[in-house]
Image (cartoon, rainbow, N blue to C red; front, side):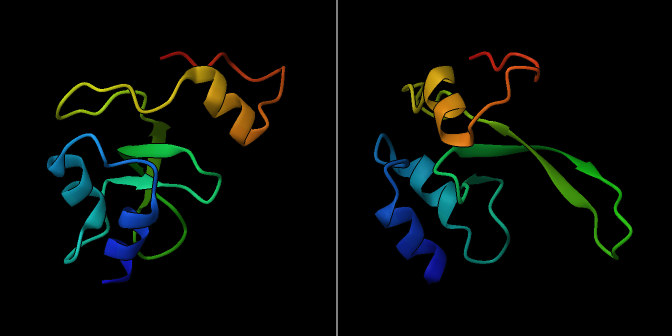
Length: 92
């Protein structure tokens, strides 16, 4: 239920019900989430950590995977995460 409140308060997920439902994830950790930095991320892989469970590798999501509506631009992501000029370019 807390995840539903987060999805409802988010600026993301308003383009279609599928994205909103994917972000809610009642029975599991959603694969599409809004990070603490305000960027919309999609889990794209797993990585082994020293902990019991693997960690998720996230990548910024620029377009809704369900309806194709632009969610954020590369410039918006860079501004929100405070991109380092030495880091590789984020592209949409």
